[in-house]
Amino acid sequence: MSNLKMKEAALIYLDRSGGLQKFIDDCKYYDDSKQSYAVYRFNILINPSDVVELDAELGNRILHQPLKAAEVFQSVCFIAVKTLSLIGQLQTETQINIVLKLTHLPSLRSYGLDLCDFPLDYTSQRFYMMQGIVIAMTTVTKYTQGARFLCSDEACPLSKGFQYIRVHVPGATESATIRNDFLCNLCASSLQEDRKFRVLGDKQIVEIITTKTLQAFQGYSNNQPFRFQSLTIFLRDESVNKMNIGNEYKIIGIPICVKTSQTAVCIEANSITLCNSKVPSGISNNFRCLLSLTSSSCWKFTAVLANIFAAQIVPPGTYNLLKLCLLMSLVQTSDHKKELEDCLDILIITSDTLLVERLLHFSINLIPRGICHPVSTEIFPTLSRNKYGTGAVSIQAGSALLAKGGICFIGDLASHKKDKLEQLQSVLESRSITVYIPGKKFGGDTDQQMTFPVQCSFWSFLDMDSSSRRTAQKNNILIGQMDCSLIPANLVEAFGLLINCNESSPCHPLLPTVQHTLNKAIDPERLLYVASKQFTTEDFEKLLAFAKNLNVEFSLEAERMIHGYYLASRRIRTDSIYGSKLSASALKYL
Image (tube, rainbow, N blue to C red):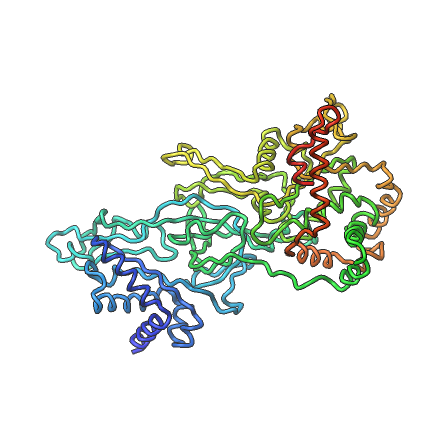
């Protein structure tokens, strides 16, 4: 009686939600094809809240026993097919494969799966919701959705028809669906697959990490050790190619245990939703007050910001040009869809790399996607063999794709090899990276290639006091007083901003910096300046988060100034004698 009641509730829900009409339309597609299938696959969209309100027992079964809940809908759909004569070729109920697609899960802690918690529950076979950033993905391969088996004994009545149908279920491997040791329930003879009825589907494997683990890539440490591990997600059929490297998603799925060379907990994905960051409601009161006080000028607020920025690292009033450029680059980051030309790359020429590096580390921690590239890893995507033996190639993100919508700090530019610098230049110019997948090396029939947009800004510096640079023969490639002879001129030009941090200039007085460094060494937690107390790191985080989501328009005065600059620069560039070799890219950034 309980099952009958749930079937009635399932039918009522399908009718009310429009799922029954969609099911009828899908059946018409199968019936019109006039082709006999071993398995007929149907997706049914389920809103758990609506189902629980209609019938609590059915809702509970969907949430906590989804495989059994699918059987309820399978029975209802089979009766509908036979009653309404929807598919003439369908013979048995086992031929119907129902996939329940959930719109959401209850916002209760017990339905969330924290990737940092241990152990993960993979035995209950129920739905969980998790959130993470894609760090790797494979190419698309095939898997067996369903297959038809027949008894090998021709005298057995089960040697015909569609009595033995095997369908993929979450957690099942390929060998669980297709094997040669199945036996007939009637005569105990071996079963043989009817290969012409095998139904194939698409499969893709992605790896995600929780957002909290990004601090491991930000060069930040609170002296608390932590461990993180990626989680593998299996995407099938309509979910394939719905996830992109670097994006953050909410995933509803069933945890499973996969045994390869080592046991691993994975997720069989059910539904995927792209995460959108919440836009902050405003800025702190201190910044509101500052904005009010400086409203008489369109420059004062920005100038004060640059002056007091990163007072924990350098004294106010020092490195103002660099800090202003860093703030501009930080504001150009985005949590939403980002135009590729909006990136602002920065290359810093300095002899005080320690202080500059500290300043850059501090800055990238102010945004969600500030990535400090570890020297032991790759900046751009790399290839490896998939550890689950699916024959697919795994594409690892690299620091640049992981920093999507943010900043990728790659350290000293001179520390990278020539081929990596050439690759960097290509990316800076095209804002994309192409990965070539040789078919022979990875067991494929043909070569493939995949192109990924690179949606982050790059920060780097050049150490002008390194021994190799001092002894190197200097070519006549000078930008002002900066010698960039060890780095290709085209690569230097590819950066949006080239900043000379000359510590001997009046803009960088040494005494305040020395005093600041000594005081910080004695008491690292001490706030040395009033600005540090009034405008905290959290205040700057809120300001950047708010500012980067503003829809900015040029004022009429700004448009006139830009137009005048273009006219003036055109005259300078076209002058054959006194003209300046100002590149098109430099003009665009200016």
